[in-house]
Length: 118
Ligand SMILES: [Zn+2]
Image (cartoon, rainbow, N blue to C red; front, side, top):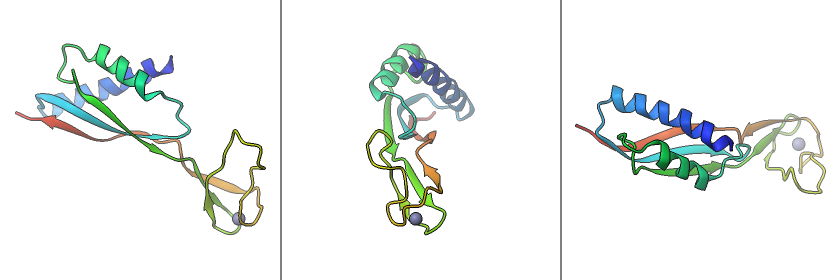
């Protein structure tokens, strides 16, 4: 379960923030997670609830915003998504080029938090 490891580091970052900003209680955590990141929201929340017991993060809700996997073609500049599990060839849908760069889908960061201060 790699959700456990990632939730643990998430918690550490948040606890540090709580301390730095003298927050009393965190109520909601907004995460941005790319489609490439294979984390189950349900498990993150479950581990979070467990690990945060007795801390100012206890009871906080994790709000995940998913970012789709997107690419930009090096030849024509088209941006597009690809279904990596599908049968279709992995080429630019506009010009058929195989040269493109990933522009989103690997994100994993805290966008913002909702908290009660001093
Ligand atoms: Zn193209």
